[in-house]
Length: 374
Image 1 (tube, helix red, strand yellow):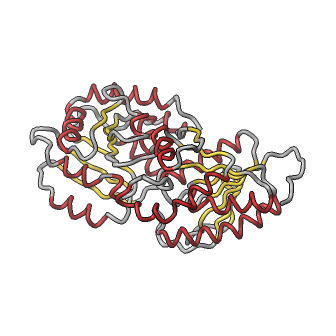
Image 2 (spheres, rainbow, N blue to C red):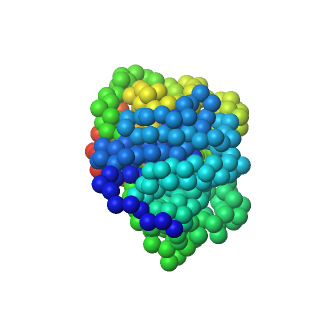
Image 3 (cartoon, rainbow, N blue to C red):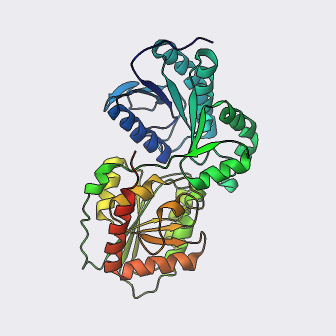
């Protein structure tokens, strides 16, 4: 194992199998953290997945992006097999980068699939690494979807945590879940930040408009609870204003969600499937929406919730870790019990019918979001 040479430059290597425009919240978080490290004088290199139409190497806002060969078919998610191809490819390319650059440390976004490459750099070059927990990489998270996967990978996950210089969760709820899996592990909490551009957004909707725009953004998976949201809409009373529901995202449940949306028969309700949105498109949606809703069954700390708050939108979210730390019930939005259709419908009805409350909660949310920076 070779020692790091003495030098004045500060270098960090980030491993993440998804990085904008690929993936969801984890990719977005790694982008903004990398950007902040660049601003603080670090040399940042990111090793992420290649994808059709994207350059193999690219310089973005001072950070160097290396997109390595993997098997990946979709921009919004990767299968377990596709993640495995990232593990092997990141080990090979990470070795080459580390031998040439000798970073001070590496960051592994998600213990799996990014952790193995970071571990091998520690093993061969003595480069310490930190594991940044995001949710899906923690045993016990979303057990209906990921229980079998976690049973298979738990020994490797625990090994990678133990060998890391530090394990960092993005919420206290996620830390507690990690400690249930490995009780004597030290886990730090560093919450997500929010893009400061969003504080400059002004809402473009008209208060006297009878049509209310409700926005959801995220993957179409059971974890995100879109079925819960759509079923709750059918409980809204007929006298409330017309509603447009904007579903920004994609995922394996899309066909089921489309079928459910078609089955909901309610006058004055339009459900729009917008597809996967890149950052400029999503920011425009924040400007045009009236309410943001995140009906998740599990979360780490959702970037989209912070972004909606920074854009001065009132929010409705479920009482799950991460979301509970951002939403102050009755102040910047409402917290509802997950899968409680009546609870969610009542919260939405309150916001739909009261433009003054929407405005007040939106401004309170913006104030809270200012406490979070990268």
